[in-house]
Amino acid sequence: MKILLPLAVVAALAGCAGPGAGPRTSHAQASARPDSVATGSAAGQTATKPSGPLYAVLEGADLDVGAGADTVAIVGRDGHAVAKARFQPRRAPQLGNVAVMLQSEAQVGDAGVYYMDGSGVIRLLKPSGDVTTVATFPMTPDQHEAWYAVSPDGSRVLAGILTAPRTGPPVGGTPWPSLVGNWTFDLETAPAGGPTRVLQHIESPDWPGDSWRTIFPVGWTQAGPVAMVGAPLATQNAWWGGPLFSIDEGGQPTTRVGGGDCSAARILPTGLVPCISGGFTAPAVSVRDSSGRVLWSPAVDSFSALGLRLAADGSAIAIGRSAANHTKQVMLPDGFTAEGWLDSETVVGRRSGASLSSVRLDSPATMHDLGFRGDFVGMLPGH
Image 1 (spheres, rainbow, N blue to C red):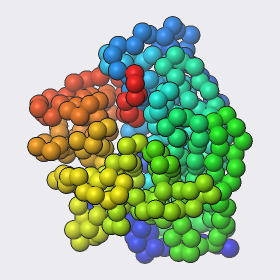
Image 2 (cartoon, one colour):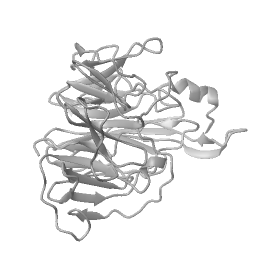
Image 3 (spheres, rainbow, N blue to C red):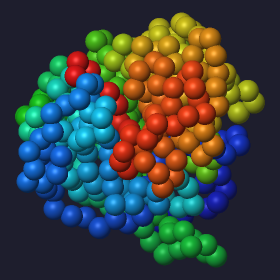
Image 4 (cartoon, rainbow, N blue to C red):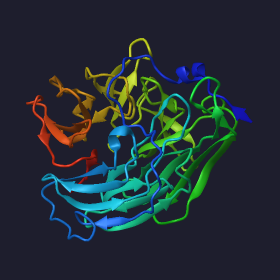
């Protein structure tokens, strides 16, 4: 079966809010490379002694033009990497004249930083430089999209793997390819270091959302894994994520998380959710607990669920150039895109083509260069 993607269908995927700095998306066809691991600050060098708290970053050959990251690193507050690992880059599936919304390749945990490569292998890089394989969810870099979550103790992984139809001849009069064949979705789980088990398997000629829904894990709380169910795959402008649900042992969505009007793409281990609600007419951001109780409502932009960056204690939030806490809202330097928080008063991000930098809320016009190119993943808990 041949599935064409006319622009009318594409436009229905996206919101109509104004443009702004959003999450990194991957369009470039980065060449696959063998996985290799470098411990210490570089291959063959001795690991640098950590300086204060540690955080994880992703690096790549050309992140600013959309090429996938190929290196994960653990860095001290002095800007020196204490551990690095290279991996096969990921590629976004080609779906037409849209930006595909991708979960970050990496996420932090108590033991270090987890990362997934383009073949679906999830590994753990520790501050010591040791690398272990945690789980394998077989796929290729082509026409696949994967989201995953790791339990707080590192013992379990849940992953949603979407296989898009293969690309065919361009849709008439456009440079965008047609999609030929069926969609496939698998929700899979694995114990750390153990075999993979398929919880759900779907094959359909229909675009996701027409007759079936994707289940993409976005986090793991003490109550269990949480997934974004039925969110749009792509956008031409705004993207608000999707409804969050707890996922039971059989892979079924159960309890709604964040409230019945909450769209999101993230949840903290504590259960706090940066929600977008209000639909196309009046989208607004709120910080909620897992039951849906609104804790506070920051006055920040609401065009990107992936762009919303909540501090670890939930007391501050940023998106693009805008940051806020309970007492103030500030504009960050021109061209700066927020990527996370070093602490509840210090946002971290970068300008296109520039090094990673930090900005304090009490002096928002001043950027502090952290000394290297890369994209922020998160602080390592307990380090």
